[in-house]
Image (tube, rainbow, N blue to C red; front, side):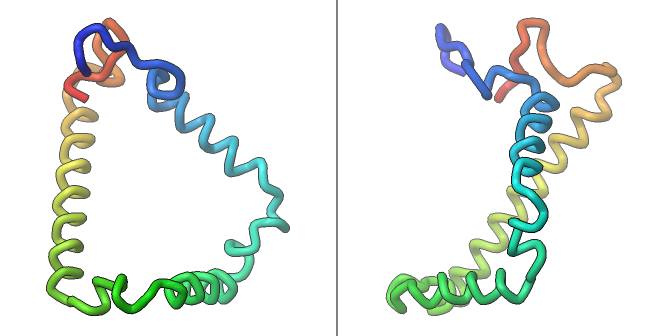
Length: 108
């Protein structure tokens, strides 16, 4: 983080508190109103409709398989790097959350 700049609001909370708040948001919608989780066919139809509303010229992945493959590799590499960092922090032997005494996470 830049010098002299402090995290505020959601960013200043530890990860567990952020997860707890996010979880509450998901629970605020009653089950009967979660139409996509209740009806996978409806979700698929909505996704298909959204995709059909994108002009052909902007459907870059369907037009260029190499570009789609490259994006997939990049996403996989990013995911793998994130997973390795999390695994490393979980096994650092400190027994803590990986936070520094000042309450900020190291290097992020």
